[in-house]
Amino acid sequence: KNNDWLRGIPMAIKDLEDAQGFPTTKGCPIYGTYNVESTSWHFDNQTEDAPYVHRLRKAGAIIIGKTNTPELGAGCHSYNLIFGTTVNPMDMSKAAGGSSGGAGAALASYMFCALDGSDMMGSLRNPAGWNSLYSLRPTVEWMEEEQVVDDELVDNYADDHNVKMPWPMSTIGPIGRCPEDLALMLQTMIPAGRAELFDAASILDQSSEQLSQIVKGKTVGWLADWGGEYPMEAGVLQQCRESLDIFTKGNVDIECVATPLFSSKELWDAWITIRSHLIFNSLHEQIGGDRCDVLQTLKERGVKAEVIYECERGIKLTKEQIHDRLRTVQAWSTCAENEFGRYDFLALPSSQTYPFDASLDWPKTIAGTKMDTYHRWMEVMVPATVT
Image 1 (cartoon, rainbow, N blue to C red):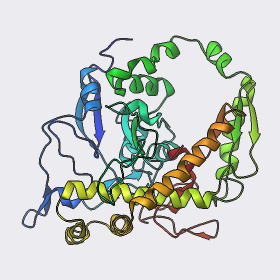
Image 2 (cartoon, one colour; image 1 turned 180 degrees about the vertical axis):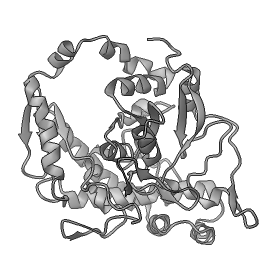
Image 3 (spheres, rainbow, N blue to C red; image 1 turned 90 degrees about the vertical axis):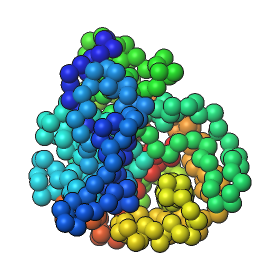
Image 4 (cartoon, one colour; image 1 turned 135 degrees about the vertical axis):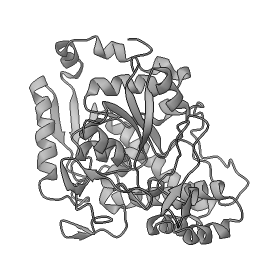
């Protein structure tokens, strides 16, 4: 209830965002310099906080460091050239997930009580699932510093290659060990101009019996493996369904959705196209210069192959291709809205596999199905990301 509820509580910020007095490395060599003699990296400290970090400080948080991510946040396994691999505290031979894997591992090992993260393709959802935590990818418009008013496909750039997204594809959000902490973190991280969107006290002041009444009689649409189109490691679906069944004790109906709600092939194609476009143009904006020089710069600086893959795709995309994929996303969003006329909630697994060997870059197969890209094993995240 107090504005300074974080007073004296230490926190670390995901290393994709700025915190005054600390470097923002993004786990990437392009932002730092390597000293051969000392065999160490140097990155300049930031002079300002990201807006939400400032709000956390204002609430009393003591920022003591940063949490690890994959290089440039690309992938759901938190390893990079600068800091190495974040492992899972439950089993240190396994991955902790990502890209908020550093936050997930830090919480699971009780270094912190609640932390920030961000989510583009499961980066808050996956680490929570793999580290026995709770997380929230909020409605993206809630977390934007400037109000999102664009809901049409419009040509906002004269550049034939750079298309402004009509809505954000990535968002910051909280991760913690209990829902109560998520509520408080969310309220603190939301921009001041949108404070009316969420009131943590309205939830925390209610008894468990009162909260049970909120979900009583509701229906959950269990999407499982999208009608068999998403390969799943043995045991994942059963464990998720058993967890969902706990809600039936509160008179919540769980209904299996046996057929796909939308073409998974179209969704995947739309998403990876938009994603490559966003990653390349973001790096072009940061590096500057000619578009054709970006790839060479990244390769010379030793950026990992997965980022090169995204940029090699992104540099070739045209405005028309991006608009076409955005229309697919809009069609799926309309479909999803219609489903919420039948269901109060839609549920999917937070990963298609259990934590894998931390020494791997990504799982190459799931249930006998080859994973043809570094992020295909997280395809189950796409429907919620682009809704």
